[in-house]
Length: 463
Ligand code: FAD
Ligand code: SF4
Image (cartoon, rainbow, N blue to C red; front, side):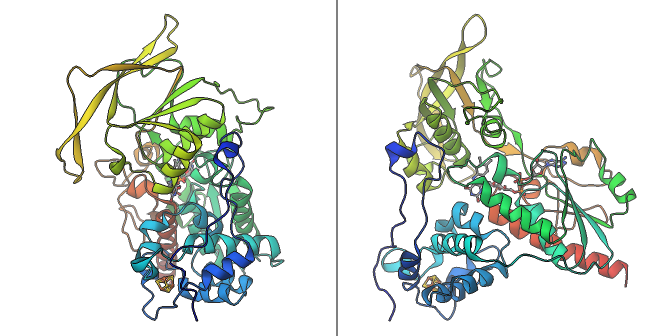
């Protein structure tokens, strides 16, 4: 008999006035008892609607049934059949718009907490399993991966399991992509990401760090080194700016630079030697997940934080859970507000931000109501730091140094969805480099598609 409680079993979390001063994980995860109770809410539907919402086709009802029986390691193995990073996905995937929005329990109550169960199972397996990945016998074919984010890591893992000799070339000094340099420790502890990378090393994947493809070597030079195929998963790390006066002043950061200094270069730790300005009052411009991460990070460094967003709360692109957490922690939302100038002193340091009030007009091409300035409504907010979080696009370095690699108007590499095949023979691509800034699970799905495409390509070439 299933548990017919209409509500999800709540997940414990740090109290808002405690967590807003530390970088420890906000949510604490289910206990085994909570996981079993929540798993018993699943109806094990025959047509598995939840699976249709999962880009990597995790066998959701099957793993949840194993959790309900207390078979946690078996549940982890079931998820691992299709997902390489369950501890990551259980924490950062927007389940409310993917698997959980298709869950039938959501019709008359709350959906089954699929994400929380996935996280529990992955954490349980990490802490309790003694199994270690083993390098499969080599098939003698070499493949290069560019970029160690979720797309590249997933592609590397799938190819290594098929017996390929895989080398990942990463520009930064640490593998993990946005999982390491972007998403803050309080949402995704870095030990968890590192563990996933260590598993790939056990499978025989080699990592070459501090290697910028397009500068250290080009794609064509990598082919010359004996790689038969190359997967490009170089992400979309180039920040967008708004173009207002004062944007080059001291104390203006892109969200990516700010978060990289703090997460990857550990500037939040007292003994870190990475410089970061500890501002008193910060304006974060933008309303997406990245803006929420930057705002909550600045808050933890001791600042009063204003999120400045030009539409209303209903249009905020960030996940509802992130907005809820940000509000609970004390972030101030200045909605229907747009910056027009960043104010500075005579040494060009930020002293404030001049904004204008907005109202919503007719819907634009995206279907969202267009924000329109209200004449004469300008006002100033005194701040000593501004963080721009207005989206990112792919860095054109690889496309501009690779002959025959087509990109679209937005500088995204053009690649087939099913296989990752690009316009250049032997080059496959996926993740944010192809779609523009998207999600971890979509990048992982693209990494899987790329591995399949590369395997078919190399087999057909050698047939
Ligand atoms: P990335 O993760 O960007 O990895 C690309 C890697 O390639 C990087 O390590 C980069 O250094 C490397 N690289 C780039 N150029 C080169 C080169 N020339 N040579 C060698 N290496 C190179 N998604 C979610 O699903 N949930 C979230 O909660 C979420 N929060 C986010 C928070 C932040 C702050 C940010 C920035 C993004 C967030 N996202 C979230 C989006 C998600 O992280 C990305 O969609 C995902 O990481 C894309 O994966 P990727 O592998 O394509 O690229
Ligand atoms: Fe279980 Fe919901 Fe999936 Fe049905 S749709 S199998 S109730 S998780």
